[in-house]
Length: 491
Image (cartoon, rainbow, N blue to C red; front, side):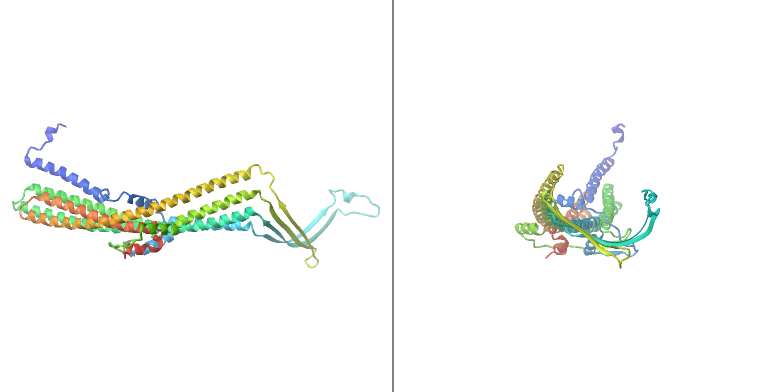
Protein backbone atom coordinates (compact mmCIF):
# COMPACT_ATOMS: atom_id res chain seq x y z
CA UNK A 1 0.00 0.00 0.00
CA UNK A 2 1.24 3.52 -0.85
CA UNK A 3 2.24 5.22 2.41
CA UNK A 4 1.10 8.59 1.08
CA UNK A 5 -2.52 7.38 1.05
CA UNK A 6 -2.54 6.61 4.76
CA UNK A 7 -0.87 9.82 6.02
CA UNK A 8 -3.43 11.86 8.02
CA UNK A 9 -4.38 15.04 6.27
CA UNK A 10 -4.85 17.19 9.34
CA UNK A 11 -2.63 18.33 12.17
CA UNK A 12 -5.03 16.69 14.61
CA UNK A 13 -4.69 13.41 12.76
CA UNK A 14 -0.89 13.60 12.91
CA UNK A 15 -1.04 14.30 16.62
CA UNK A 16 -3.32 11.33 17.18
CA UNK A 17 -1.02 9.04 15.21
CA UNK A 18 1.97 10.11 17.29
CA UNK A 19 -0.07 9.63 20.43
CA UNK A 20 -1.05 6.09 19.45
CA UNK A 21 2.59 5.22 18.78
CA UNK A 22 3.57 6.60 22.17
CA UNK A 23 0.72 4.73 23.83
CA UNK A 24 1.71 1.48 22.16
CA UNK A 25 5.24 1.88 23.48
CA UNK A 26 3.90 2.60 26.94
CA UNK A 27 1.61 -0.42 26.71
CA UNK A 28 4.51 -2.69 25.78
CA UNK A 29 6.67 -1.33 28.58
CA UNK A 30 3.85 -1.67 31.09
CA UNK A 31 3.13 -5.25 30.02
CA UNK A 32 6.79 -6.11 30.49
CA UNK A 33 6.69 -4.52 33.93
CA UNK A 34 3.69 -6.62 34.92
CA UNK A 35 5.28 -9.76 33.55
CA UNK A 36 8.32 -9.09 35.69
CA UNK A 37 10.94 -8.63 32.98
CA UNK A 38 11.65 -5.06 34.06
CA UNK A 39 12.32 -5.91 37.68
CA UNK A 40 15.64 -4.82 39.10
CA UNK A 41 16.86 -8.16 40.42
CA UNK A 42 20.50 -8.83 41.35
CA UNK A 43 22.18 -11.23 38.98
CA UNK A 44 23.24 -13.42 41.87
CA UNK A 45 19.63 -13.92 42.94
CA UNK A 46 18.94 -15.78 39.72
CA UNK A 47 20.65 -18.84 41.16
CA UNK A 48 18.21 -18.84 44.07
CA UNK A 49 15.24 -18.63 41.74
CA UNK A 50 16.64 -21.42 39.59
CA UNK A 51 17.24 -23.56 42.67
CA UNK A 52 13.67 -23.06 43.82
CA UNK A 53 12.35 -23.78 40.35
CA UNK A 54 14.38 -26.97 40.07
CA UNK A 55 12.74 -28.40 43.17
CA UNK A 56 9.92 -30.84 42.62
CA UNK A 57 6.67 -28.86 42.73
CA UNK A 58 4.51 -31.96 42.48
CA UNK A 59 2.47 -33.27 45.37
CA UNK A 60 -0.12 -35.83 46.38
CA UNK A 61 -3.43 -33.95 46.79
CA UNK A 62 -4.95 -34.95 50.11
CA UNK A 63 -8.41 -34.39 51.51
CA UNK A 64 -11.72 -33.32 50.05
CA UNK A 65 -12.30 -29.81 48.76
CA UNK A 66 -14.91 -27.72 50.55
CA UNK A 67 -16.70 -24.51 49.61
CA UNK A 68 -15.26 -22.75 52.65
CA UNK A 69 -12.31 -20.49 51.86
CA UNK A 70 -9.26 -21.79 53.71
CA UNK A 71 -7.05 -19.27 55.48
CA UNK A 72 -3.53 -20.49 54.73
CA UNK A 73 -0.61 -19.30 56.84
CA UNK A 74 3.00 -19.86 55.86
CA UNK A 75 3.34 -22.34 58.73
CA UNK A 76 0.32 -24.27 57.43
CA UNK A 77 1.70 -24.30 53.89
CA UNK A 78 5.08 -25.67 54.96
CA UNK A 79 3.47 -28.21 57.30
CA UNK A 80 1.39 -29.58 54.42
CA UNK A 81 4.38 -29.56 52.06
CA UNK A 82 6.52 -31.73 54.34
CA UNK A 83 3.70 -34.30 54.36
CA UNK A 84 2.35 -34.26 50.83
CA UNK A 85 5.04 -32.81 48.54
CA UNK A 86 6.18 -35.43 46.06
CA UNK A 87 9.86 -34.68 46.55
CA UNK A 88 9.55 -35.21 50.30
CA UNK A 89 7.61 -38.44 49.84
CA UNK A 90 10.12 -39.87 47.38
CA UNK A 91 13.12 -38.92 49.51
CA UNK A 92 11.45 -40.41 52.57
CA UNK A 93 10.88 -43.67 50.72
CA UNK A 94 14.53 -43.63 49.64
CA UNK A 95 15.46 -43.50 53.32
CA UNK A 96 13.16 -46.46 54.02
CA UNK A 97 14.77 -48.34 51.15
CA UNK A 98 18.21 -47.66 52.66
CA UNK A 99 16.96 -49.07 55.96
CA UNK A 100 15.88 -52.21 54.12
CA UNK A 101 19.34 -52.52 52.59
CA UNK A 102 20.89 -52.27 56.05
CA UNK A 103 18.64 -55.03 57.38
CA UNK A 104 19.57 -57.24 54.43
CA UNK A 105 23.27 -56.65 55.11
CA UNK A 106 22.76 -57.39 58.80
CA UNK A 107 21.17 -60.72 57.97
CA UNK A 108 24.51 -61.87 56.55
CA UNK A 109 26.03 -61.62 60.04
CA UNK A 110 23.29 -63.40 61.96
CA UNK A 111 22.44 -67.11 62.14
CA UNK A 112 19.65 -68.42 59.95
CA UNK A 113 17.42 -70.96 61.67
CA UNK A 114 14.57 -72.91 60.13
CA UNK A 115 12.23 -75.41 61.78
CA UNK A 116 10.23 -78.16 60.14
CA UNK A 117 7.86 -80.99 61.04
CA UNK A 118 6.79 -83.64 58.54
CA UNK A 119 4.85 -86.87 58.40
CA UNK A 120 5.68 -89.30 55.62
CA UNK A 121 3.59 -92.24 54.37
CA UNK A 122 5.30 -94.69 51.98
CA UNK A 123 4.34 -97.75 49.99
CA UNK A 124 7.08 -99.49 48.02
CA UNK A 125 6.65 -101.85 45.09
CA UNK A 126 9.21 -104.68 44.79
CA UNK A 127 8.14 -105.64 41.30
CA UNK A 128 10.38 -103.23 39.38
CA UNK A 129 13.43 -104.44 41.29
CA UNK A 130 12.58 -108.11 40.67
CA UNK A 131 12.80 -108.98 44.35
CA UNK A 132 9.23 -110.23 44.45
CA UNK A 133 10.13 -112.81 41.77
CA UNK A 134 13.12 -114.17 43.65
CA UNK A 135 13.03 -117.91 44.43
CA UNK A 136 14.43 -118.69 47.83
CA UNK A 137 13.27 -121.94 49.45
CA UNK A 138 11.07 -121.19 52.40
CA UNK A 139 11.03 -117.46 51.74
CA UNK A 140 8.47 -115.48 49.81
CA UNK A 141 8.58 -111.80 48.98
CA UNK A 142 5.49 -109.65 48.73
CA UNK A 143 4.92 -107.53 45.70
CA UNK A 144 4.27 -104.40 47.82
CA UNK A 145 5.66 -103.28 51.15
CA UNK A 146 3.52 -100.94 53.19
CA UNK A 147 1.97 -98.60 53.57
CA UNK A 148 4.04 -97.48 56.53
CA UNK A 149 4.64 -94.00 58.00
CA UNK A 150 7.09 -92.06 60.10
CA UNK A 151 7.33 -88.54 61.51
CA UNK A 152 10.25 -86.13 61.64
CA UNK A 153 10.64 -82.82 63.47
CA UNK A 154 13.75 -80.73 63.72
CA UNK A 155 15.62 -77.61 62.79
CA UNK A 156 18.44 -76.36 60.60
CA UNK A 157 21.09 -73.81 61.45
CA UNK A 158 23.47 -71.98 59.13
CA UNK A 159 25.78 -69.22 60.35
CA UNK A 160 28.64 -67.32 58.84
CA UNK A 161 30.89 -67.19 61.87
CA UNK A 162 33.30 -64.67 60.44
CA UNK A 163 33.32 -62.78 57.15
CA UNK A 164 35.11 -59.45 57.05
CA UNK A 165 33.39 -58.73 53.74
CA UNK A 166 29.95 -59.10 55.33
CA UNK A 167 30.98 -56.95 58.29
CA UNK A 168 32.14 -54.14 56.02
CA UNK A 169 29.07 -54.38 53.80
CA UNK A 170 26.88 -54.02 56.88
CA UNK A 171 28.86 -50.99 58.00
CA UNK A 172 28.57 -49.49 54.53
CA UNK A 173 24.81 -50.07 54.47
CA UNK A 174 24.43 -48.54 57.93
CA UNK A 175 26.34 -45.44 56.87
CA UNK A 176 24.35 -45.26 53.64
CA UNK A 177 21.16 -45.27 55.71
CA UNK A 178 22.48 -42.32 57.70
CA UNK A 179 23.24 -40.53 54.43
CA UNK A 180 19.70 -41.18 53.19
CA UNK A 181 18.19 -39.77 56.39
CA UNK A 182 20.35 -36.66 56.10
CA UNK A 183 19.32 -36.33 52.46
CA UNK A 184 15.70 -36.43 53.62
CA UNK A 185 16.41 -33.60 56.06
CA UNK A 186 18.03 -31.64 53.24
CA UNK A 187 14.90 -32.15 51.14
CA UNK A 188 12.78 -30.75 53.96
CA UNK A 189 15.03 -27.70 54.02
CA UNK A 190 14.82 -27.28 50.25
CA UNK A 191 11.04 -27.72 50.22
CA UNK A 192 10.77 -25.04 52.91
CA UNK A 193 12.68 -22.67 50.62
CA UNK A 194 10.56 -23.62 47.61
CA UNK A 195 7.18 -23.34 49.32
CA UNK A 196 8.23 -20.21 51.19
CA UNK A 197 9.29 -18.57 47.93
CA UNK A 198 5.99 -19.46 46.26
CA UNK A 199 4.07 -18.16 49.27
CA UNK A 200 6.01 -14.90 48.98
CA UNK A 201 5.18 -14.78 45.27
CA UNK A 202 1.48 -14.91 46.13
CA UNK A 203 1.95 -12.06 48.61
CA UNK A 204 3.87 -10.14 45.96
CA UNK A 205 1.10 -10.72 43.42
CA UNK A 206 -1.47 -9.50 45.94
CA UNK A 207 0.52 -6.30 46.45
CA UNK A 208 0.79 -5.81 42.71
CA UNK A 209 -2.99 -6.08 42.34
CA UNK A 210 -3.49 -3.44 45.04
CA UNK A 211 -0.94 -1.13 43.41
CA UNK A 212 -2.34 -1.69 39.94
CA UNK A 213 -5.90 -1.01 41.08
CA UNK A 214 -4.64 2.32 42.40
CA UNK A 215 -3.06 2.98 39.01
CA UNK A 216 -6.38 2.29 37.31
CA UNK A 217 -8.12 4.73 39.66
CA UNK A 218 -5.51 7.39 38.94
CA UNK A 219 -5.84 6.85 35.21
CA UNK A 220 -9.64 6.96 35.46
CA UNK A 221 -9.50 10.23 37.39
CA UNK A 222 -7.13 11.75 34.82
CA UNK A 223 -9.38 10.65 31.98
CA UNK A 224 -12.50 12.03 33.67
CA UNK A 225 -10.78 15.35 34.30
CA UNK A 226 -9.52 15.59 30.72
CA UNK A 227 -13.00 14.80 29.42
CA UNK A 228 -14.59 17.50 31.58
CA UNK A 229 -12.05 20.07 30.45
CA UNK A 230 -12.58 19.09 26.81
CA UNK A 231 -16.33 19.43 27.17
CA UNK A 232 -15.77 22.82 28.81
CA UNK A 233 -13.53 23.86 25.92
CA UNK A 234 -10.41 24.29 28.05
CA UNK A 235 -8.49 21.23 26.80
CA UNK A 236 -7.91 19.74 23.34
CA UNK A 237 -9.24 16.39 22.22
CA UNK A 238 -5.73 14.95 22.24
CA UNK A 239 -5.67 15.16 26.07
CA UNK A 240 -8.79 13.01 26.24
CA UNK A 241 -7.37 10.47 23.82
CA UNK A 242 -4.03 10.34 25.61
CA UNK A 243 -5.55 9.76 29.04
CA UNK A 244 -7.99 7.21 27.64
CA UNK A 245 -5.14 5.20 26.14
CA UNK A 246 -3.36 5.30 29.50
CA UNK A 247 -6.54 4.12 31.24
CA UNK A 248 -6.87 1.15 28.88
CA UNK A 249 -3.19 0.34 29.40
CA UNK A 250 -3.61 0.27 33.17
CA UNK A 251 -6.73 -1.89 32.87
CA UNK A 252 -4.83 -4.35 30.69
CA UNK A 253 -2.00 -4.46 33.23
CA UNK A 254 -4.50 -5.12 36.01
CA UNK A 255 -5.89 -8.09 34.07
CA UNK A 256 -2.39 -9.52 33.62
CA UNK A 257 -1.61 -8.99 37.31
CA UNK A 258 -4.77 -10.77 38.43
CA UNK A 259 -3.98 -13.68 36.14
CA UNK A 260 -0.45 -13.93 37.56
CA UNK A 261 -1.94 -13.92 41.05
CA UNK A 262 -4.26 -16.82 40.20
CA UNK A 263 -1.42 -18.86 38.71
CA UNK A 264 0.80 -18.19 41.75
CA UNK A 265 -1.97 -19.47 44.05
CA UNK A 266 -2.42 -22.55 41.87
CA UNK A 267 1.33 -23.22 41.98
CA UNK A 268 1.29 -23.00 45.77
CA UNK A 269 -1.70 -25.33 45.99
CA UNK A 270 0.07 -27.79 43.71
CA UNK A 271 3.26 -27.76 45.79
CA UNK A 272 1.62 -28.41 49.16
CA UNK A 273 -1.01 -30.98 48.17
CA UNK A 274 -4.22 -29.06 48.83
CA UNK A 275 -7.42 -30.84 47.73
CA UNK A 276 -8.12 -30.23 44.07
CA UNK A 277 -10.18 -27.10 43.62
CA UNK A 278 -9.92 -26.02 47.27
CA UNK A 279 -10.33 -22.22 47.55
CA UNK A 280 -7.92 -20.51 49.90
CA UNK A 281 -6.48 -17.13 50.73
CA UNK A 282 -3.14 -16.05 52.14
CA UNK A 283 -3.35 -15.35 55.87
CA UNK A 284 0.15 -13.88 56.42
CA UNK A 285 1.37 -10.57 55.02
CA UNK A 286 5.07 -10.81 56.01
CA UNK A 287 5.92 -7.08 55.84
CA UNK A 288 9.45 -5.71 55.72
CA UNK A 289 11.46 -6.73 58.78
CA UNK A 290 15.18 -6.42 59.44
CA UNK A 291 17.26 -9.29 60.78
CA UNK A 292 20.63 -9.50 62.48
CA UNK A 293 22.49 -12.20 60.55
CA UNK A 294 25.83 -13.63 61.67
CA UNK A 295 29.05 -12.60 59.98
CA UNK A 296 30.05 -14.34 56.76
CA UNK A 297 32.83 -16.31 58.45
CA UNK A 298 30.56 -17.41 61.27
CA UNK A 299 27.84 -18.32 58.80
CA UNK A 300 30.27 -20.45 56.79
CA UNK A 301 31.40 -22.32 59.89
CA UNK A 302 27.78 -22.96 60.85
CA UNK A 303 26.84 -24.09 57.34
CA UNK A 304 29.75 -26.52 57.02
CA UNK A 305 28.84 -27.98 60.39
CA UNK A 306 25.05 -28.23 60.14
CA UNK A 307 23.92 -28.40 56.50
CA UNK A 308 22.29 -31.74 55.85
CA UNK A 309 23.51 -32.01 52.26
CA UNK A 310 27.13 -31.66 53.43
CA UNK A 311 26.64 -34.22 56.21
CA UNK A 312 24.88 -36.55 53.77
CA UNK A 313 27.69 -36.26 51.23
CA UNK A 314 30.31 -37.06 53.86
CA UNK A 315 28.28 -40.04 55.05
CA UNK A 316 27.95 -41.27 51.46
CA UNK A 317 31.71 -40.93 51.05
CA UNK A 318 32.27 -42.97 54.22
CA UNK A 319 29.85 -45.62 52.98
CA UNK A 320 31.79 -45.82 49.70
CA UNK A 321 35.04 -46.29 51.63
CA UNK A 322 33.55 -49.21 53.53
CA UNK A 323 32.11 -50.68 50.35
CA UNK A 324 35.62 -50.61 48.86
CA UNK A 325 36.96 -52.32 51.98
CA UNK A 326 34.27 -54.98 51.59
CA UNK A 327 35.21 -55.55 47.96
CA UNK A 328 38.85 -56.07 48.91
CA UNK A 329 37.76 -58.41 51.71
CA UNK A 330 36.28 -60.80 49.14
CA UNK A 331 39.78 -62.32 49.02
CA UNK A 332 39.75 -63.13 52.75
CA UNK A 333 38.80 -66.52 54.25
CA UNK A 334 35.25 -67.06 55.48
CA UNK A 335 34.40 -69.23 58.48
CA UNK A 336 30.95 -70.81 58.50
CA UNK A 337 29.02 -73.52 60.28
CA UNK A 338 25.80 -75.38 59.69
CA UNK A 339 23.94 -78.09 61.52
CA UNK A 340 20.77 -80.11 61.65
CA UNK A 341 18.89 -81.81 64.44
CA UNK A 342 15.89 -84.07 63.84
CA UNK A 343 13.71 -86.38 65.86
CA UNK A 344 12.56 -89.31 63.66
CA UNK A 345 10.21 -92.18 64.49
CA UNK A 346 6.95 -93.88 63.68
CA UNK A 347 5.37 -91.49 66.19
CA UNK A 348 6.68 -88.53 68.12
CA UNK A 349 6.62 -90.60 71.32
CA UNK A 350 8.83 -93.24 69.69
CA UNK A 351 11.15 -90.82 67.89
CA UNK A 352 14.91 -90.75 68.34
CA UNK A 353 17.18 -87.78 67.86
CA UNK A 354 19.67 -87.42 65.04
CA UNK A 355 21.98 -84.53 64.21
CA UNK A 356 24.72 -83.37 61.92
CA UNK A 357 27.16 -80.48 62.39
CA UNK A 358 29.71 -78.99 60.01
CA UNK A 359 32.18 -76.15 60.41
CA UNK A 360 34.86 -75.02 58.03
CA UNK A 361 36.76 -72.28 56.28
CA UNK A 362 36.53 -71.36 52.61
CA UNK A 363 39.22 -69.45 50.78
CA UNK A 364 38.67 -68.00 47.29
CA UNK A 365 41.37 -69.25 44.96
CA UNK A 366 40.21 -68.21 41.50
CA UNK A 367 37.06 -66.18 40.78
CA UNK A 368 37.62 -65.36 37.14
CA UNK A 369 38.34 -61.67 37.82
CA UNK A 370 35.13 -60.97 39.71
CA UNK A 371 36.91 -59.65 42.79
CA UNK A 372 39.10 -57.35 40.71
CA UNK A 373 36.00 -56.05 38.94
CA UNK A 374 34.20 -55.41 42.23
CA UNK A 375 37.21 -53.50 43.55
CA UNK A 376 37.42 -51.39 40.40
CA UNK A 377 33.74 -50.47 40.66
CA UNK A 378 34.05 -49.64 44.36
CA UNK A 379 37.08 -47.42 43.72
CA UNK A 380 35.21 -45.54 41.01
CA UNK A 381 32.20 -45.07 43.30
CA UNK A 382 34.46 -43.75 46.07
CA UNK A 383 36.06 -41.21 43.75
CA UNK A 384 32.59 -40.05 42.68
CA UNK A 385 31.38 -39.64 46.27
CA UNK A 386 34.58 -37.81 47.22
CA UNK A 387 34.21 -35.40 44.32
CA UNK A 388 30.56 -34.80 45.21
CA UNK A 389 31.47 -34.05 48.82
CA UNK A 390 34.08 -31.49 47.76
CA UNK A 391 31.64 -29.96 45.28
CA UNK A 392 29.07 -29.50 48.03
CA UNK A 393 31.65 -27.71 50.17
CA UNK A 394 32.19 -25.31 47.30
CA UNK A 395 28.44 -24.97 46.80
CA UNK A 396 27.93 -24.14 50.48
CA UNK A 397 30.53 -21.38 50.26
CA UNK A 398 28.83 -20.04 47.14
CA UNK A 399 25.33 -20.24 48.65
CA UNK A 400 26.29 -18.43 51.85
CA UNK A 401 28.19 -15.63 50.13
CA UNK A 402 25.47 -15.23 47.50
CA UNK A 403 22.79 -15.06 50.18
CA UNK A 404 24.66 -12.23 51.92
CA UNK A 405 25.15 -10.36 48.64
CA UNK A 406 21.44 -10.64 47.87
CA UNK A 407 20.40 -9.66 51.38
CA UNK A 408 22.59 -6.55 51.45
CA UNK A 409 21.45 -5.55 47.97
CA UNK A 410 17.79 -6.10 48.87
CA UNK A 411 18.10 -3.90 51.96
CA UNK A 412 19.51 -1.09 49.80
CA UNK A 413 16.83 -1.62 47.16
CA UNK A 414 13.99 -1.41 49.68
CA UNK A 415 15.31 1.89 51.05
CA UNK A 416 15.83 3.40 47.59
CA UNK A 417 12.54 2.23 46.09
CA UNK A 418 10.55 3.36 49.15
CA UNK A 419 11.92 6.88 48.67
CA UNK A 420 11.23 6.64 44.95
CA UNK A 421 7.57 5.78 45.58
CA UNK A 422 7.19 8.84 47.82
CA UNK A 423 8.78 11.06 45.18
CA UNK A 424 6.62 9.56 42.41
CA UNK A 425 3.45 10.16 44.43
CA UNK A 426 4.48 13.76 45.04
CA UNK A 427 5.27 14.25 41.36
CA UNK A 428 1.89 12.84 40.29
CA UNK A 429 0.04 15.04 42.75
CA UNK A 430 1.76 18.16 41.44
CA UNK A 431 1.21 17.13 37.81
CA UNK A 432 -2.52 16.73 38.47
CA UNK A 433 -2.64 20.16 40.10
CA UNK A 434 -0.80 21.72 37.15
CA UNK A 435 -3.11 19.98 34.68
CA UNK A 436 -6.20 21.11 36.59
CA UNK A 437 -4.90 24.67 36.58
CA UNK A 438 -4.28 24.52 32.83
CA UNK A 439 -0.55 25.04 33.22
CA UNK A 440 0.35 21.80 31.43
CA UNK A 441 -1.27 19.17 29.25
CA UNK A 442 -2.05 15.51 29.96
CA UNK A 443 1.37 14.30 28.80
CA UNK A 444 2.92 15.28 32.11
CA UNK A 445 0.16 13.53 34.05
CA UNK A 446 0.49 10.33 32.02
CA UNK A 447 4.25 10.32 32.45
CA UNK A 448 3.86 10.83 36.19
CA UNK A 449 1.41 7.94 36.39
CA UNK A 450 3.85 5.72 34.52
CA UNK A 451 6.67 6.77 36.84
CA UNK A 452 4.54 5.92 39.86
CA UNK A 453 3.66 2.53 38.37
CA UNK A 454 7.34 1.79 37.79
CA UNK A 455 8.24 2.95 41.31
CA UNK A 456 5.55 0.78 42.88
CA UNK A 457 6.66 -2.20 40.81
CA UNK A 458 10.27 -1.76 41.90
CA UNK A 459 9.28 -1.36 45.54
CA UNK A 460 7.14 -4.50 45.53
CA UNK A 461 9.97 -6.39 43.83
CA UNK A 462 12.46 -5.11 46.41
CA UNK A 463 10.25 -6.30 49.29
CA UNK A 464 9.91 -9.71 47.64
CA UNK A 465 13.66 -9.93 47.03
CA UNK A 466 14.35 -9.01 50.65
CA UNK A 467 12.11 -11.76 52.03
CA UNK A 468 13.47 -14.33 49.58
CA UNK A 469 17.03 -13.28 50.45
CA UNK A 470 16.35 -13.86 54.15
CA UNK A 471 14.80 -17.24 53.44
CA UNK A 472 17.69 -18.15 51.13
CA UNK A 473 20.16 -17.20 53.86
CA UNK A 474 18.38 -19.57 56.26
CA UNK A 475 18.55 -22.30 53.61
CA UNK A 476 22.24 -21.66 52.94
CA UNK A 477 22.89 -22.18 56.66
CA UNK A 478 20.81 -25.36 56.73
CA UNK A 479 18.20 -23.98 59.15
CA UNK A 480 15.34 -23.05 56.81
CA UNK A 481 13.10 -25.86 58.05
CA UNK A 482 13.53 -25.05 61.73
CA UNK A 483 14.15 -21.28 61.80
CA UNK A 484 12.31 -19.87 58.76
CA UNK A 485 9.87 -17.91 60.93
CA UNK A 486 12.73 -16.16 62.74
CA UNK A 487 14.32 -15.07 59.47
CA UNK A 488 11.09 -13.90 57.84
CA UNK A 489 9.72 -12.36 61.00
CA UNK A 490 12.77 -10.22 61.62
CA UNK A 491 14.30 -9.24 64.92
